[in-house]
Image 1 (cartoon, rainbow, N blue to C red):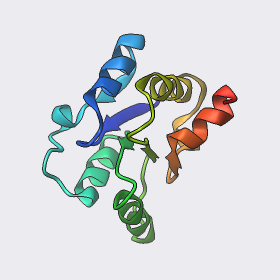
Image 2: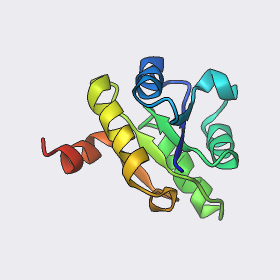
Image 3: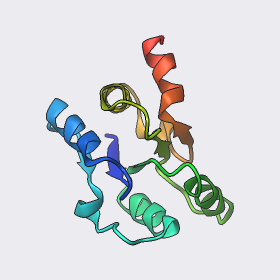
Length: 124
């Protein structure tokens, strides 16, 4: 089953919206996992240790750290980059669709931008 990890920069309302939509979704907040103040490599390591797809707004530095992790031979459950300007509703819908209709192996070692998933899933 897919599990999510919110980065410290993610709007907590996204975590709450997913949890309210489906209580059985395992979506850890940054506070749940003690991510505040940690660097990207540490955040990626914690997400990997807990086998959680990392959800982040960080499109500036996270992709580079993600690539460096893979280049070092380390794996990742995946990273989803969410635009800060994307409304919570569509983000919640995409995360629910990913959770309900895909397998964790589909996202392993992948980095994706959620707005790019939205048109594919919802035909914007």
